[in-house]
Length: 84
Image (tube, rainbow, N blue to C red):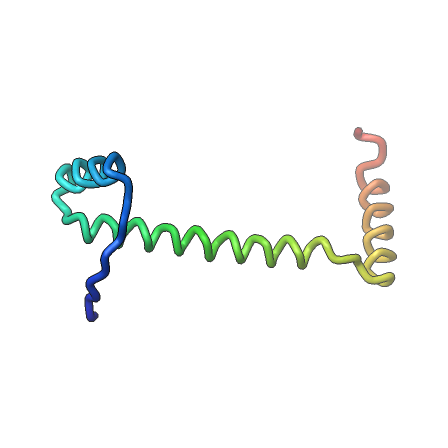
């Protein structure tokens, strides 16, 4: 895997925190930034997937599906009988 150098500008206070944190698990600042970016990308991709799933499940159900769901609820009530 090829590494690419890049320069970023961050607040001094954030740099100090990164520098301190990088010394604790004995990783370089570059590795720490790389891990943070990977985590951010995973989080972003998960959010995108969740939005797509939510969109898919909030779409209007088709008429046959609504009929099927009504029948299922009716059958479910019949099976439970008044247990609630």
